[in-house]
Length: 278
Image 1: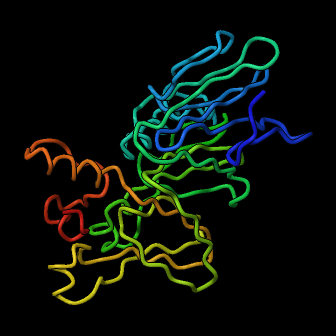
Image 2 (image 1 turned 90 degrees about the horizontal axis):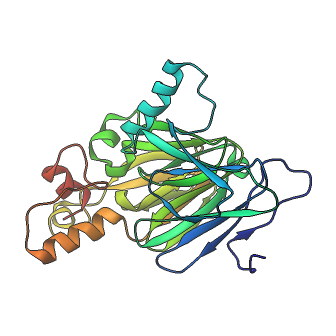
């Protein structure tokens, strides 16, 4: 039996495709999913830690949701959406073909938290940072959310191209550092560093606001813009975007090489300065 903890879910009576799971660990977490016969979980390629032998692993083109249509073009479209958000063209489907219970575990590749979210509780849709998706119950689709506002696209860092998760099942999102959830009332505003916006519901308006005067911009270290999130809706904030951690490690190593993924905007080094990622 899975031990009780705050990040555990048990199947509700009469609810189909409702997987059981438990989040284990502190800074370097993994999620252990318990499947009944015929149930499946979908995960990013390479995320698996271990599985029971009765669980069959199949690599598929796209997000593995089965909702893109049976034709090649439908699958190609789903895979293309994943490619735009920086993910692999392929996902892996884990299906329990035996009897009784079987388990499979997936780990986050970065220090932080794995957040379990049931999409049905948030209107069936969630907007997340790129690379947020780790695993989900079969049926969740992964799309692309573009910011329509030009300024937000140019200077919003994570906010230009984000992942859109849709469905009614459980999804497991990986986020950096400590995660805080805020519920915003209608018209309530929250100013967040652009890289620290981990996820929000579609009812939240994402925009940019000036960080202050010239002195604050040059010497404050927070960049020219903050993300302005306006309610109503839910917002998840991460304390340590992986790109910020990687940037500090790169600076400490004294090397100018490497690759900046995540917080940096479309403008490269200038965008990093504007976004406060120096």
